[in-house]
Image (tube, rainbow, N blue to C red; front, side):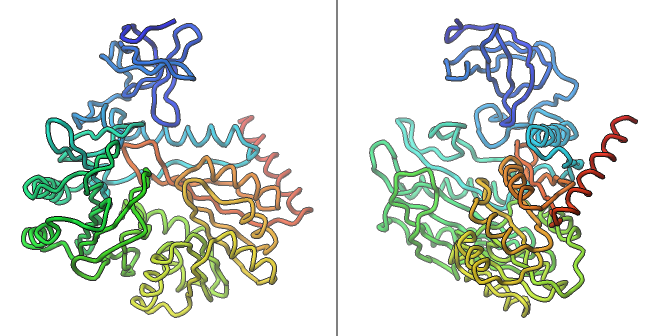
Length: 472
């Protein structure tokens, strides 16, 4: 049995889906960050876990050819980046292999994973930033949460943010300290400021600041707002979000607009979008345009289609597609996002799209019960994926095609297995790296409905062709 504090040299067997290196001491698994497959590393055992031991990296004894020097001094402490020690081409290979392994372990044996479309700019891409605040005996600290903990890693510069955003963060932290705004202390249920959320338009340059507080009363609020406006003219709106709950969810349900309109605008794929504090908007602008262009090219629209855009957010996918189809119906549970989407359609003069504020699964069931006609269903669900009710209702509607965009290939593959049992077959999965330096990747699949007899022929043909490829 290994003991806490014990040092030993280990060979890394592989890097798991979370970016953790896995080594073995006899039968015990050892998990350590900042290492690559086949490296030999000196590690120090930290504690015993259910599935083995956690360890801290000491030094690399034998490095991998894919290793590069992490440029961030907080790399091993901060939970934001997982792969910064891995060269960019190796990151793409690792993400592709991860998804290929998921497919291999599923029933989707004929699903081919395509090469990752990599990012031109692997740093400075994030347009949404959340900074946490805390206080200890040394004073007020601000930064990101250490992975798997509620401990703040003090941070004033992050390589995933652009230079202007980092300057703004430093300025806001200095203001909080100067005005003696008390950070919220979760263990004591005291203090006010929980987080500061920043959104920045990649094209417009407009900035939103959201002050997330534990209560409505906010001493020094007026001074804080005045100072931000004086020093940062690019800030177009400031919002106070009140979160009373003891939860890891950042935003609460109550908001007060302290300055400006309560939203910012940005341009994406030729359209202008209004973005509120709680509305979903992809964090990597450049790669989002690549993602949408790739996804929509798969549809091969003729102009007469009725498209259902589910989990639509502020309507970015549906409005990008709208000029190429007859009509689009967007469905979104977040009411504020729907309000933004309606205004976005008016702002961009998109007349053939409408929006419904409802749970996507419930709305799909209603459509199926009323036997509505839909040609294409687009879905971009949260990381947890879709629901059985959604998939069942979608199968009853029988659209000719389903375009599935996901930030979690694992739940996407799970859902595609269910769709396959309903007659929907997808032969390719496309990967777009929206999240360089992290273990995340965006994936796209395009499924078509094949009637039982044709489906059997299609699958048999696919198997024959695959056999020929493997034999070569």
